[in-house]
Length: 152
Image (cartoon, rainbow, N blue to C red):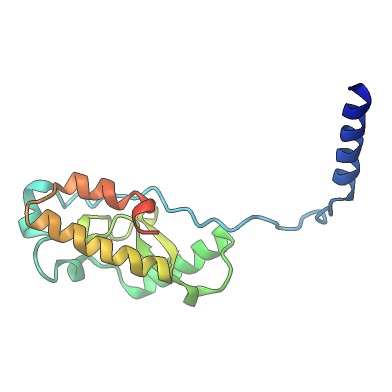
């Protein structure tokens, strides 16, 4: 038994010693596709949804300027080591504006792959309709959209 264990251990050491070693100072960070923690807009509450997220066109009044989100997207792509460049990603609100997500807080914005963002957009609209029709609370909708398994 000891001989078998010693052979396995030796083979493992040989395999480890044959593994390539990155040069000193080389950046080998893996891409970080994880969503941000999210942040809520304090101006949106369950009590005022009829004057905020349920008003047609309301999100246009709070959406940050393109220049802001584009610059943030570039910074986040670099910091997260994401491949493919800016066109591959959409700077997306993790908690969407339609559900009272914070418009400018970097904790609520992230470079999301475009195909994933498009799927998530459909969920955002459905959840907004559920909240505005009274079928779901704002808190429940926010919990659902924060679960990536539903839209990935």
